[in-house]
Amino acid sequence: MIFYMNSKTFFNEYLENETDEDILDASYIIVSSRIKNRSDRKNICVLNKEMYPDSEIFHCDDENDMIDIYFDQLDERANGFLAMIILASIKDDANFIFLNTKYEEKLPYFKWLQEYVMIRFEYPVYEYSKYCKAETLDSYDAKVVKKKCRKELKKVQAEQRQRNRKTKKGRAKLMEDYAKMSKKDLKKELKKHSLYADGLSKDEMLDLIEEFVI
Image (tube, rainbow, N blue to C red; front, side, top):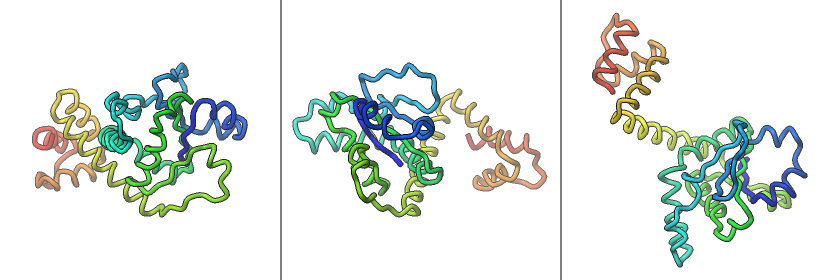
């Protein structure tokens, strides 16, 4: 499941309510300009640049304008990450916690994030305090949600490949990925570009990809 909460709720409610095992197993995403991550734990990440509202949002007088700009920001920077954690939440029964401070709740961007995820992926995100008091949970169609997530990830990966092709470092990274593929998958890739011929070795396939695909 995916939750959001401020730091006060985290210390006063979440750490009190949840088991040590669940706390350690969850992943924590800091979306705050005030919370500093001093831990080297792999289950804590900071996504200020991707998900904390850009400064232009604070200059809007109308909340609908704020939401529109924030949705555009998430479309551009966070959609792939959101698709990834939603899939993990469903397939692996993993928990993800978005964190900010009590002060930052004056700009209710976590509520906008909640709305965004429901619109884009049809998946519920819960405010932790309300979740604890709820008698029922929101329903969703796992098949539909997973299809939307996979479609978004495929799009993000294609866009990343296009960006990688424009730099020497990016092309080297693409070749590393191709080198890890099996001969069967390389054959499929070459066939998509009408480049495959019988009897090619893996090295020859990789040479063709480097020359004509990347």
